[in-house]
Image 1 (cartoon, rainbow, N blue to C red):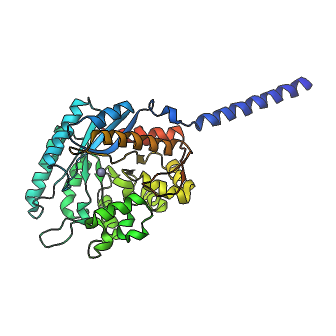
Image 2: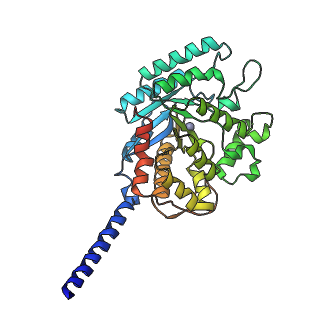
Length: 364
Ligand SMILES: [Zn+2]
């Protein structure tokens, strides 16, 4: 009897130890030292030059990158951007992939516009593009011949989205802007957002109340998603809903094919973390399959290579610290207040930094 009790005590102890170890295994974390050994993908950068500085830094830090073409007036011609993307893809043995984009030139001649657009997309995919970017000029800037803003749910886009949806080609949609864009500068809590609108008043919608509102733009994006439920859609910049964990969660529930990228919005996550760290952290734990890591690092012909190297090194390392540790951090791009890292478990980090991107951008 005594022997049995001793045995049963030993067995219980064994069970406790096993369970405890098992528990630790499911809650494993990476450290700062693991940074270089973990394979990672930055799904949103802009390389508009043949220079390899950013690519070399990516190799050093174990990153693959996706460079994104944009129909922006400050970027090279779309054909040049496509050529650079295709060339870097070849030269880097696939460590660099690229997204093409569409042009709104000749929009009012709708039949011709559609033909040209579909032909351009076909050619881009033959050249190796793995997805398509739609930019904020849709909904915020571009107007048709009658002076109306063209929104992303305009029926003229439907055949394009059908074409992409039928072929499982992912769409990166930068539709809208941070919520702060509709606020006065002095109400903006994040330094880099305030500085951006100070320098780009044409995009500061608080100054342009006659233009479509935040709600109208988000609604047009949602209408488009409802018309094309099978479309693989990546909401760039946290889907322009970076100001509210509740709103981001609600849209993930509503649109099961939507994933968020966080290009230049880790700063805004850090701002939310200052108020509600548990809420931000829980969102990543509850939706581990729905975020892809991205930075929006921009490398242009006029960029200083040393600056680009430092920017990439610093941004990638700081973000890794924020997501993998619970260190107390500060970033002047956010503000002068501290925040604590999210310390997400390994299985969430692996999805955020690589597995989700490999699923969503399957051409990678
Ligand atoms: Zn971008």
